[in-house]
Length: 393
Ligand code: PLP
Image (cartoon, rainbow, N blue to C red):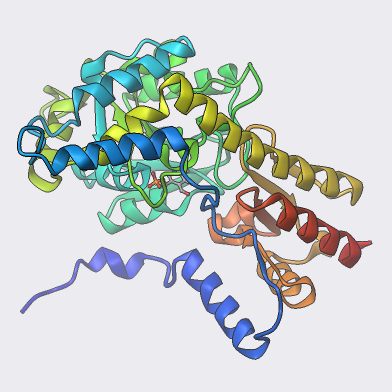
């Protein structure tokens, strides 16, 4: 008899975005003619940059010629050309990353979830609440104990083994200062804990005091890995490519306290369960970091930033408390009139046909808060904000 992994019974019944889709579907069935503006799910809407598409086409053409055809990529880490491009990108903002510490994957969500395989099920995990749900769900699935604190770690447990951090943060849009991150690094070092740092939105950072990488913080190489993605940097949500950086000197411990390099365990895990990202996609990702690619992807990010600015202006005018928007495509605000998150979700959906994400879906501290994303057209963003202003004025 096949038994299930009992830990799955400890997961929250429905994933946040499934519940949102359900409510939208029900509403649209009853109101088929409304023009709905979707500012809920954090998916990009603008197409890939021309330089990226061209590199992808070219690589696909190479796959159709015997002399340049490629099968599996042998190292399992990703092609050297892309790992070099990633290291070069970090260098451009002053962070030294050795090429052999870069591992190419199919996106940040997989790596954030899969990295848990190499840690003991006894490990205690700390996540900041509100939180991107994957960190919690993946650890619950493997039976690990998950504790919560706030973004800056105002109260910290005495003992912890794994810490998930995300900056700029999903859902709040907040980004750590150097000092805030240094505090986390010191805490991890004093616990011999590992920080799993999700930098998926680093390309949105505009303020110079907000680090783009945890590796710009002193001591981080001894306690952190960084997971990043082309999804939000370059619109790869449907193309799939990301990277994880694992310092060579970062150790895990056996039960008898013997050190083992974390990267070796990750390579072993990936060697068994992952066959790499396709060659054309890796070539397309490489093009993101060419001068042309950087310029074109930055134009798209600026477009989203413009949308975030429109939302921030509206919320300021409505005197609604909010965070985010400056270093992130997310704006996170307090639901007006003391409504709870799902109440406000339904209110927006029914009254102005605008979809957002209820903060409560991101954890207890998200209750009473709401997230809107800048991943939309400028026209839709303006329209949604006009509707919101009318509703709340
Ligand atoms: N990390 C964070 C914080 C995210 O918000 C998301 C997607 O919304 C991801 C990772 C997923 O990235 P990817 O598309 O690379 O799997």
